[in-house]
Length: 128
Image (tube, rainbow, N blue to C red):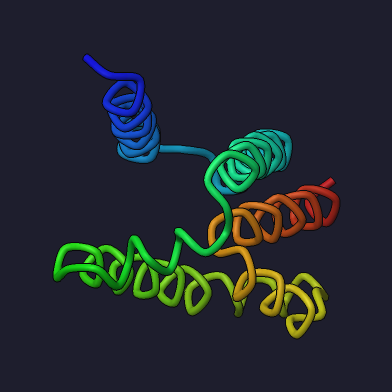
């Protein structure tokens, strides 16, 4: 099994664990620490990827064939749905959405995880 296949499988396993956590009745407020750690870890992985392969390959990967475009659209839909669902809670928690959504637009999941970490932190502070 190649290193790339192992990385892909690790991502799948992580998502399955997260879905299991949600199905098991996750807490009302998520973990700000976990979301921040995921944002930092994914940002670090992305930085390594950019350093090794360059930033333009992202566009190439998503425009070379139908699967690339399908994955691109899937990413856009997933981020759009997440923002749609998170925005009301973020507004209610007092977050200024414009800078956060610009960050999400520029970095996708990295910004989304950071935004969720901030939201969870604000909600936990309000609950306390």
